[in-house]
Image 1 (cartoon, rainbow, N blue to C red):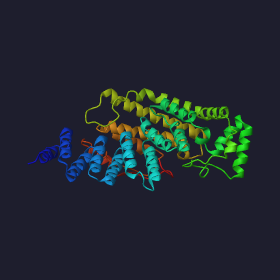
Image 2: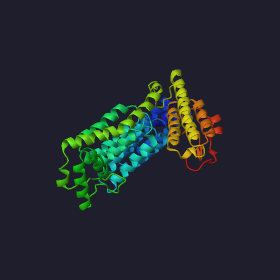
Image 3: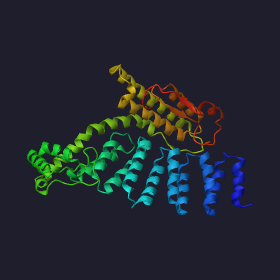
Image 4: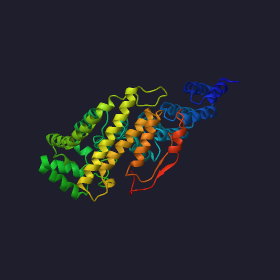
Length: 397
């Protein structure tokens, strides 16, 4: 009997033996047989879907075997299982970039994947690396208007490295000409405040030549076509410096508002020592912190909803952007908690109860935790297996 067969026998004897699984995976990697590896990794990740590092190992095995597209499929399954794993998303983005670079749809495909990553994980408190990855990709191709648009989004998002993001945003503005990072309308509008004569000349020049360096007026272009040289030359460096300051000052209010949101949550965030899944038990202080953090976020959302109802008694709260954001923060925190606390069924029950009483749900299917996660969830399956809530409001949660 081979070593791999012996390890399979040990695993099958106790599917919850994490160390036996790891020994099996180490053995199949050395076996250098992709079919053998697939069988082991598929089975392991069915039981331990939150082990993000092993999704990456699996994808790397496929890539080294020459199956590049299949490696991307593994990453796609991985981020579906752990949508808040920033490490897995950045690895997925790097792999995709390497494989599709040079293809005709490279830019569209990459941008769509970046947007999907932000949709799924952009509100994770430790998502800064994902945002920076996107910004670096856009700015690295000199798409500075797009980079600024991403900064405008992250500056509204509470994240761990918010101060660093603010400094990086200011660096982008200070190290580039404002006409390269702004749309034509924005640039001329700000220029008019500090240099009306130069702004008027630009407007005339652009109108005469039908020049506008916006692609469609709503989305930053891939490349920028500047105004006529004779007109742009009338813009002095002091004028540009003043415009840069306007750009920064216009984001200051958003910066301060997001800072306040971060400070509200910092007490809980700094206590999180193990945000990832592990089979080892969590310390009681960690478990209590998650429970208290969830209560805080639920109360924050309730306050936002109550304030909206008081101000707009006849309006549907679900349609309000602030209410939607508050509800999403609660859901994201639960998803984070259920990765770190996957073995603690009380958190799964709490989430199910929260969803059940939520008056803002449309349709939701809530099943048991992905895979088995090495816990006896027989009782939970009776609660969670294919539970549906009937729509109460139009739209989504």
